[in-house]
Amino acid sequence: MTEKLLYIPKKITEPALYAYFGTLVLSSVVFYRYILPWYYLLAGAVGVTAVFYYGNALSKRWCVLNVRRPKRFEERLFWTAFAIRLVYMLLIYTVFMLQYGNPFGFENMDACYYDELGRFVADMVRNGNFHFYDRISSYFGSDLSDMGYGIYLGFIYFLTGNSMFIARVIKCLLSACTTLLVYRIGARNFGDQTGRIAGILCMLWPNFWYYCGCQLKETEMLFLTVWFAYEADSMLRSRQLSVWRILPSLMIMAAMFTVRTPLAVVLILALLFAVVMSSTKMVSWGKKVVVGLLSLSLIGVTMGNRILEETQALVEENAGGQMQKKNMEWRSTRDNGNKFAKYASTAVFAPLIFTIPFSTMVNVPEQDVQKLLHGGNFAKNILSFFVLLCMFQMLLSGDWRQHTLLLALFLGYLVVLSMSAFAQSERFHQPAMPFAMLFAAYGIAHCGKREKRWFGFWIAGIVFVSIVWGWFKLKGRGLI
Image (cartoon, rainbow, N blue to C red; front, side, top):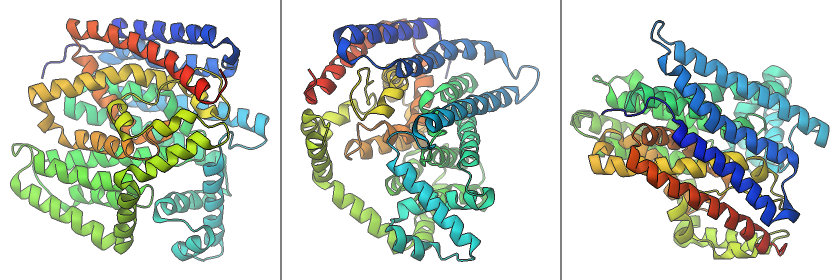
């Protein structure tokens, strides 16, 4: 495999930056009555500038690291990622305290719930009561998917005196570790330079910064997902199979059922798919049989019937798209809802799933997170071109069989998401984003002159769709 580009070139980043600021100006002119407040404009500009301007500058400057001292790039990547996240977390913590009088901020119902759950667990530990499962179920009515994060947060609160601040510093560390793992996975699968591009994109991704500054479980969930991918990929590529190579990925799969059930199911199916479909040159038949049987047996023994019950309920809820249809109808009729939402379905979401959610560049009510993260969403819209380019190139070359685990994790989760009620929700796209960056880095590294011409058309399309999306948001709410 020959890498064509060692860094993100200006021929990609400059048009993306011009497109963002041009779209922002055009949207502000067309919908002048609904211009975003200055702090959302600033947040978006910082996010897009980080991804494209500094993505170009740092990937070019750091491409020569490790020449004299091994691991130098990894050290620079980890500590820079941690510093960025820590600064962002401190800033947003201060803003939330000043504006709202609490560190939860806007749209904080889930964050407050997890905080209450963590405090409940911490109090139980202080009282010497470790019957978490029964007590949490009776008090909160929680399903298994919420208990893992609540117990984890509870132990942090127990050790730190209920400090949300320290819990968020730990989130910054975990997110920096995720960035490092993304680089290592990319380097192992696609070559060192492509891995560096992926790691730098992950380091600079503004949406990842945001989840370090709130009490939601996305940061921990992303870390577990990427850690699983790292361990499982290492296991499949290793020459010898041992208990210590198999155990980490299997235990992460089991733990994920206590964080988010649909994602845990995707991890299991992705590993089994990779075991079956990987080239026998990489995964021998003996390894295929052993890993496949152990995956199924460990999950069954560890988690029991509760897993089967929740998985079955999940399938039944999403069968035929009924849950998605009901949710879209609710979104269209609620206060400040969008009357067009009822027309959305899997048939609409599936073709767009690599690119959505589109960027919200108009000031609509009750969508503060979408407005704050509009820059990151625009960057995703742009970079999805390279994700699709990667898929196409792998299919034509046949290289996909060397990367079946990553493809199964990425595509499997997007398929589940497209059939769910949260296909347009930025928060629920987070588990797919590290893999999107890996594939986008591959597409960037293998982007030739012909592909760059198509990229120009893609940018024009994203600009047009972003303006239409602003109209859709306002018109659906009767604001224009």
